[in-house]
Length: 191
Image (cartoon, helix red, strand yellow):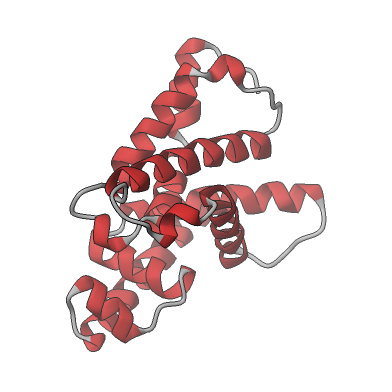
C-alpha cells in the first residue's frame, strides 16, 4: 500500500475502531482500571506510523494483519507489565493467534463466508464499518453487544462484568442492536 506522509495518518486512523474492538475483546477485564484498550490502540497506531517504511505489504489484508501483530505485541507487553511478579496463564497465550481468531469471529459475525474476491473485500469493508459503528455506541451498549455476540457471554456473565442485572443487560443489548440497525440502514441508504 502506497501512502504519502500526509495521508498515512488517515489511512491508519481508519483502523482505530477495529483495533479497539479487538483490544477490548482480548484485554482481561480485571486490568480495565489500570489499562485502557484505547491506550494500547493509540500506541499501536503510533508504532505503525513510525515503522511504516517496514511495512512490506501491498493489500489491505496485509495491512490489517500487520496492525494486528503490532497490537498483539503491545497487548502482550502491557499484560506482562501487570503480571510480572507472578505466573499467569495470560503470559502463555499467543496474543497474535488470539487476535487472529477474534478477527475471524468478527468477520463471521459481520457476514457469512463468501467466495468471490469482491465479496471478500466487501466483507472486510463491512467489518471495518461495523467496528466504527460499534465504537459510536454508548459504552455500556457496546460492551454488552461485544460480550454477547462476539465473545458468547451469557446475560448473567455480562451483568457481572458491567455490574448490572441480566434484565438491564438485555435492555442494553436491545438498544445497542436497534442503534446498529439504524446506523446500518443509514449507511446503506447513503450508498
